[in-house]
Image (cartoon, rainbow, N blue to C red; front, side):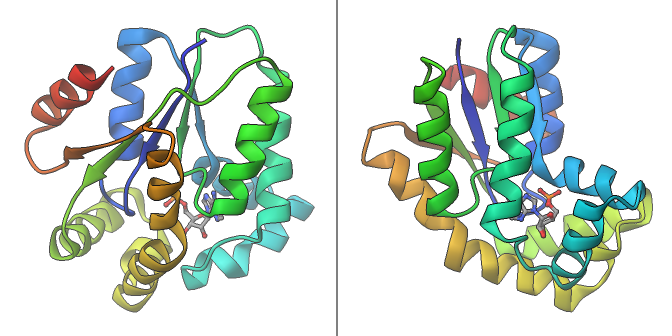
Length: 187
Ligand code: AMP
């Protein structure tokens, strides 16, 4: 198995690039953001719990997020490898992921971080709000909070995997194909 973390701030293009990687390499894509949106749309108990955190641009608590992720990984063992998109977002999540993968005889092979500046993120998310209608993209204050949460809580995950020589940065500015090529060069 090849297991990849696609990393970067909100709006850096993780979801889009993950889909392109799935087409080329046949990965199994796990987006915790998409999973939460599914739960909220179906008004499940987990969706109800996650809603307020997501609306405010805060992280859903680790316990809920890790349990949801574990279920999805364990249920899909017959795959070429995983692309984790939007997970891990905290170092306890990274710890939990490593323990989980080890328990399944696997590991995270690489973390690829898409490098995009703050102004580009704000512009991209405002554009995406009009297309996808996500409330957490439309509100500029929520977007700013998500960027702040990313800097405070999530960037340490880059360092966590850098300690194992697994983290690389890729320029996230450019056309979809240009960024995709940079990612593929790292695989
Ligand atoms: P995303 O689509 O990845 O930008 O995620 C949308 C929202 O879902 C985030 O702003 C968080 O509130 C929540 N979320 C997604 N993934 C995680 C995670 N790994 N840990 C905590 N919260 C998450």
